[in-house]
Length: 330
Image 1: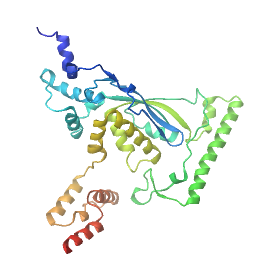
Image 2 (image 1 turned 90 degrees about the vertical axis):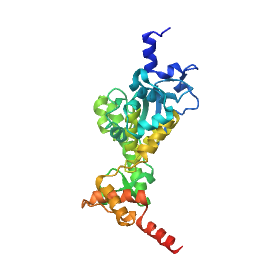
Image 3 (image 1 turned 60 degrees about the vertical axis):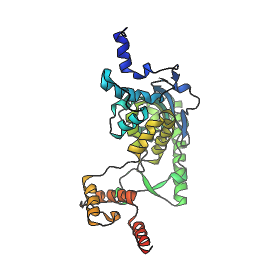
Image 4 (image 1 turned 180 degrees about the horizontal axis):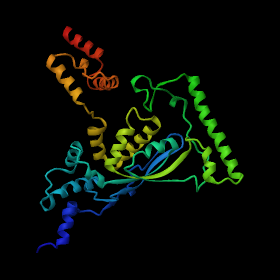
């Protein structure tokens, strides 16, 4: 007897349904999954919802939605020619990104205002934030430890966010104390304005960007990977980088295969420009050490970026030369 059309269509859209042998499991109820990480002095990030929420325990959890979405492209002719894990890694390796949008996560985040404003530049997610127009600002602010105080970057990268070197101990301690003292004064003025009857929406104007704010963020997995790739990068500001690292740690327990593929094919990968590829080819053709391969561009910043990539790929030129000399003597 032929299956009803509605049943056939549901199996095409969800091939795992035909293979399911156990009741679905609620991802958020799994005791082994960590859903919250504390960040900075008073911040945190926590997972409050996941889509899909119910998963087949015999498969790869929420990540089954990714491979099922990819397989639906074949319609009724779908066949499981590869394992879920292999297909997932193939999809990310070749930047077939839309299947990863079938998994979505909702986070509750408490972060300093200046971190939240950087975060919300990522417009591919949906945000809702607490408002100081409707609620009173509590006495919670980000206070940087002296070790977090860095000097402004110099040279070709001087306009980047990240500081690149430590300052003297006295300067760092004074700067840390200044931030804390400013918050204490500002919050005292804020409370004074409220006591005089000033509306919350106007009284909040004295509050500095060290104030903690709370927001809810819903984002699909592909755009979450894009966020992590940018905000976990070495040149990202340290105070948002630690949030990226916290989310990455949470994601390893929720979507481990996708997270592993992200680490292998995006986070730890490198894009080479045409000039950089030509420089490597020229060095190989001439027999010159790859550590000395040079691009033809005269742009100072472009050359500096290539030198950083060259060190990452081949190591410092001096170390490579020493190794070659050692091997020659042996």
